[in-house]
Length: 636
Image 1 (cartoon, helix red, strand yellow):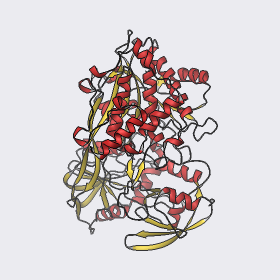
Image 2 (cartoon, rainbow, N blue to C red):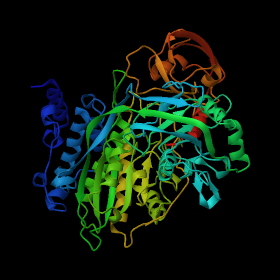
Image 3 (cartoon, rainbow, N blue to C red):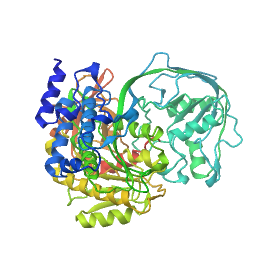
Image 4 (cartoon, rainbow, N blue to C red):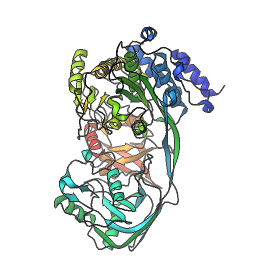
């Protein structure tokens, strides 16, 4: 038999779950379909009640151990390992009488997820009317959400590319952009406030607004860099989105050459007018024309959400409460398995156990959808697909509860205390949560917002009141060290019991939660990545580097950090720190474990063919976390 199937047999036999787990015999039969007639017991039947698992630390740990086993190879979307996980989750649903809630009476909802994207040689940009020959990845780079294909048009400058009637500002006022290429600044004017909560500042809004005015393409340029910040192009990574126009990220140096050729002021002066004087400075870039092509390929990965159904029994049986969590992780990176025990075998386990407990409830007024999402790590793909293609009317979903990283609970530290977000998105949420947490004796960090990077945000975005349960990031986040033995199983079971109790209240409440909008972003960056002891270089390593080259590739440099001040740039490859080899984050931690903020280290790196040594002053991890958090403005 195939080697992979042998490993699957070992895993399934180890946990005594072969019949339900959906182990496969190889790629030819990669997707196990468990249909309605395979369910072991009807919902609410005596047999189902008798076999319901207890929400115990042992039960919690056994599910995490299966999902985070090395043989599942990190559950990356489109791999054998995640297919085993999908079959396992469906098997656990079936074993306790949870009905299929997917497509065609199965437990699955299939979709195509984008895989690795590659720019093609046809990608090019030429300019007439200005003395410039733009080079790909040096002067410009397509965004991952760019439409593919050719474009051409005269260039116009449209400020920030923002129309905000409520603030009496319109960069498109008296500006004709039809069949033209729109050059615009990133984000929004300073006086318009925090870009993280603004609907005007994100890329999607900017591109679609330009398209609505008839533009043929957009070119976005960074705002004036802060002290120590580099004018960097975003690396090309496709998420599978297409915002409707060819879209380029261009450097300030390149953009200034276009503006000068067209008789306009430079970006510093134009941005000052926009930010300080609330002016509209939009204008044609006279005599300058752009002709180009965006060409790239995107690998298509077969993915699927896992969906179980607990039908309601009361007058509100056509209304639904969703319990969900993503079951994918990062797979194998740099030849190391990233098992994702906390992220998110823990949350998936919470869904399994809470739903199995709800299956044994003697009465449920509303129905319950039990969901495992794929593709979360690639950009909330599974939950976004579901919300765009729901199996029940989206307006019938009255509440969503998401569990993501509930495996590191520490009641005594704000780093990994339970956080509950989205409390302001549904009237009555706060009351229910306060009562149930008080009964359970659980301290928690409240947050009214559901604007955070996990699957609840997809549901909140389509008008569903949403709660998020989360115990914070930690040193093993997105690292090979996120393994089963580090999971707090007792804490995970405690949170799962709490979620079950809150879900039961929402299922049986006389009135469903009423949706409320909360514009502020949620607080995500807490835990070992943002606070606490230790030191930081002020960089983001490239976790998707699959080149096999020695060293630690830098994906991003944070403004004001030691790396930025020393001159390290995105794309550099760190080879040595104080003469010791560094290939992974764990190597870096080992080299710097005795260092303190303010210490200086010697970094040997390569930049293209050149090798250099730079002295970098380390800063505290807390300070680095604050800088990182302020720079993470998704889609902006």
